Amino acid sequence: MASVRILGRFQDAWDSDVAHSFRNSPITIVAAIALAICLIAAGFAPWLAPHNPFDLKTLNLLDALTPPAWIQGGKAMFPLGTDDQGRDLLSAIMFGSRVSLVVGLVSVFFAMLIGVSLGLLAGYAGGKTEAFIMRVADVQLSFPAILIALLISGVARAAFPGEAQDQLAIVVLVIAISLANWVQYARTVRGSTLVEKNKEYVQAARVIGIHPVAIMFKHVLPNALGPVLVLATINIATAIITEATLSFLGVGVPPTEPSLGTLIRVGNDFMFSGEWWVTVFPGSALVVMVLSVNLLGDWLRDALNPKLR
Amino acid sequence: MLAFIIRRVMQSAAVMLTVAFVAFGLFNFVGDPVASMLGQDATPDDRARLRADLGLDDPFYKQFASFVGNAVKGEFGLSLRQGRKVSTLLKERMPATLELSFTAAILALVLGIPMGVYTALRRNSWFSQVLLTISLVGVSLPTFLIGIYLILIFAVLLGWLPSFGRGDVTALGWWTTGYLTQSGLKAIILPSITLSLFVMTLVMRLVRSEMLEVLRTDYIKFARARGLTDRSVHFGHALMNTLVPVITIVGLQLGGIIAFAIITETVFQWPGMGLLFIQAVQFADIPVMAAYLCLIALIFVIINLIVDLLYYAVDPRLRIDRATTGH
Image (tube, rainbow over all chains, first blue to last red):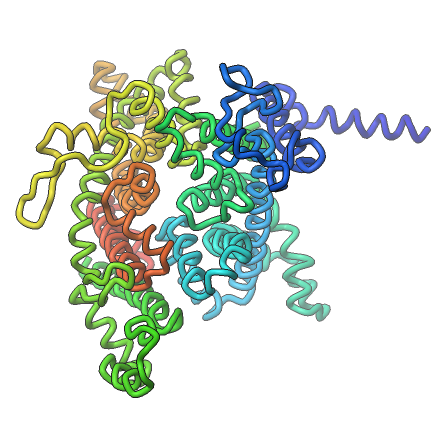
């Protein structure tokens, strides 16, 4: 019986609108597969990667700038070639995607946390609190996120001495990207909170004396969360791009523990001498990752939007 | 109208003051200006004298007021890294950035609008599908990667165009222009394409969706019923009505283009303000960072103000709205 019920539930999920729109969109399926490959390659990099690019003992400078395996001079043990320090590019890309994905996901999470909390507070408290939070949001929104992130990491650079900079680089990066992106969440959540707080269930909760914080998080938040999650999906791609851009500009992840952006930055110097693979492969990995997240986000937005059915 | 203008100008001034406050905070709380100006061998007496000279012993509001006063005159002190006046540095770099941004904006409009019109009118043709797919890739690709790929194809593999710098420039007073020499024109092609791609796809998608919306309206049906030619319906009626939001968005994006020039300038080693700012961030050169921040903020605020006022002038509905809500 139990197996029938599980099967039935699977059947329900299979027949649901969301699953249906997924099956009927070949591009989305391709994007999902590409993203799954990226996630597995990044998540299991220490076990799947052919080499450990950070183990200095295994690096041999004689292997530096070996071309990809299918080009003359390439070696089978370095399928995508090596960089200037003899690191296997495929392994470096796998470890680099790990850094990129972690920074992207964590900073989206923190941006969401800050944005949702402030948005809830603004919508629920109203008055001067709301005016203050939304003015700050307005001012920040009139500048591009990348500029804000650059500024924050510049300040962090001035505030910490050289040694600590490299250790804190990833933390600073996450803080910079989160602080640069919280506004959208705050505006979205504030909008839904304004609608929800006048509904009867919230008034009922207030009448029976539930603490305002509990009302905000337990009653209002779940009803305001839908659009936020869609926004977050799309913002993962933006966060990954921001991280890569900052690292490329030289104010992000240090070369000792490179992300995709750092790898592209390093490879950029070798492009003119004909060693194109050092920058093209990490770049392509970034494109595949961002494009598949974007395509999935677009699909999710349309699939969850009842107006488009 | 006057009340609206005054209110908007006040708002802009408030934004500028906030930004100035942040810039002032950068100066005061990050690093010690006295230590960085005097070096390590200075005696405590020297320090105290310099502190007094710089007005660092004054109360907070007085310091802030003098900072704002200097900022209005364009004085941000000396660059910590280059030891030259920040205002001179910015003035030298400004023409490069503005020429690049201007070229990119024109490119985005000249190519984006026709592409948007085409994809709206021929919705199901294969070329529209190709354009839309490319535009999705254009939105997804990070700017710096587009630049790198363009350099790889057109500079390294084909060798047609230069990969860095501005080429030869001609000086017109304090303004330097790359428009007048062949190498200058060649040098601006790749950076401006890189910078405009994002806005171009934005314009194209916006024109497309606005056109599709307008083409469904009654007055278009009426225009067709009157027997007007397709040409006059599409371009005389439909396109004209889509242009207001397009101009607004492009206007607002103009500031974004100038800010995003940071990335393009780094990729192409374009000697503009963005490259100066990136170097300042890398070396924690606070005066340059603060000055760039204030300048960009000023450009943003002015653009926003102009767009708002234009919108107010162009769209009569806004005026009625304001009148009924009692502002």
